[in-house]
Amino acid sequence: MAKKNPGEKATAFHEAGHAVAAYGLGIKLKKATIVPDLKNEYRGAVETVPPKRFRADYDMTTRKRTIIEKQVMMSFAGGIAAKKYTGRFNRFGAGEDHRQAVKLADCVTGSPEETEAYIKWLWIRTDTFVEVNWKIIELVAAELLAKKTLSYFEIESVIQGYYRSFSHTPLTEK
Image (tube, rainbow, N blue to C red; front, side, top):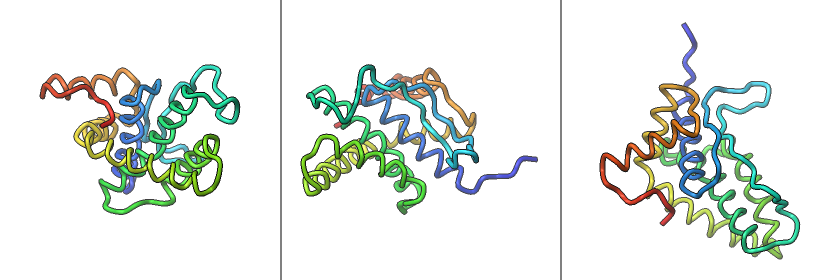
């Protein structure tokens, strides 16, 4: 009999937050998994397709700023979703996500104060996104717990199934 992972549910909500944000923000998604990778020291992961011809640190355009904002929000969504589920923020679990978000935000800002304000604004936007899409995150988390790994098409099927059953507006940030 396989050992139960006590943090598996929180990990499922964390990865579901990333996956739903990626889908809703138009980030190309490959898969989400809660299968731990002990070699790389993570409990789960969401794999996305990197944007074509994109260097965050070079030649800032509106398109690149938008890509960075979406990536930062996707990074934040995992920790915010896990916090909503558990009632506490897991700095260890979301630490690398936060570091990556700050690194990206630094590419579009001119000072530490601006970076801090930009990060705070994107955090608030992401918190709202998670709140508005919480039922979908719950459904994706449940499917992750059942199957451990979901392809893009399986994630899309869960999300689209939600909308078909309730006649809701398509998934977007508020």
